[in-house]
Image (cartoon, rainbow, N blue to C red; front, side, top):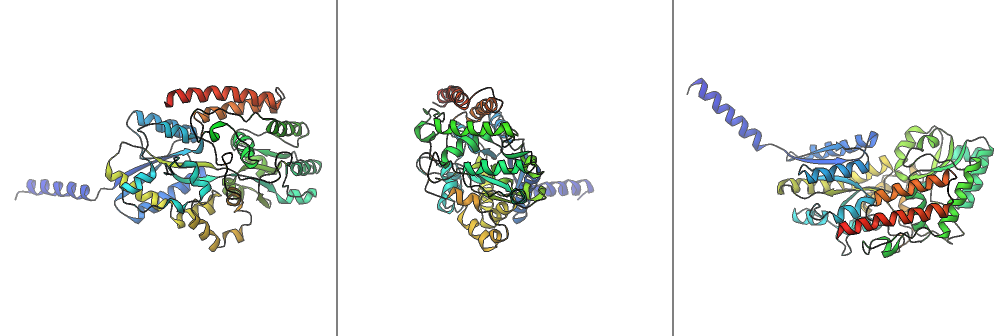
Length: 433
């Protein structure tokens, strides 16, 4: 055989060999920046190291809204990933995207991958199920708001960790009297102060079981109980007892730098707070408004799940199913929970965290789990499923900012938010039919 023939034969064998051992690539678009983005990368890298058939490639696409928008645009262009991370308020939008999603439970069954829906924490999984109980997306980073507090500052001010809103006001006054610039603040204000306040006190935010029973739902959170609470918070702003710090997690530095003694926001800020705060901190359950309820009901989740998009090859879906099995394993979920403050999505991951002594070493880190599991969810506290709710939250933010700025009363702000929000719900209902 000539040298030329040998070279050609070698080239053919090389190509054949690389084809035979080529990994099937799985694109995972996500919204986790910073340290959590590094943790997402680690999960993918660790999975890739367990086998040679599939390679999960995580791609950061911006915040939650940007990631979901990018995935929808990519699907229309037929350039979409296999997996996309979507926050909880995008659930109705994803459900209405006919032909765009591959329900996770169906995927796992089709791929022959072991799947047990009962393994997941009920408070987490119920948010993402059909009325028939089929799981649509894989829970990943679920959280709930808690009350974070600066223990050193409370002790110095002679204040107790509050359990009620009256207690919040008393503690905030003592903190400010002792020299702090701010008593309490919060982030993700629609989620914390409307959605979770309502669930915690067993109040509806809308008709049709908060949207779970149909798209023909209307917002109803402009009730006098919520208005009274928000008016009181606004009045606290006059003396620095409350300071508004932004729509998302913008106010985190106010807490970690010691400016604000209490902060209501996601349990998932545990990683950030533990690395930034130079004081002893803790977390406790959300405060109860005793004028509204005698006892708390349960809080509702935030965070996001992983949706699988339709239109890919069977082999890619086999790899996707294997990755989701790995992602939801007790070891991976316990690690993710302990690193981030997101709740473990399965009972097994929770039990493993207990066995590993995590809650003994880090008191209070099971607060989110206890809040979510406090009582059997009612129609008012299961969660919410409204279309266009990303835009509705923007409306709520605008109206609440008018309240904090003294331009509107709480009732005026809530009435306007409901009216504008219902217009968005009707637009969604027309497109979803």
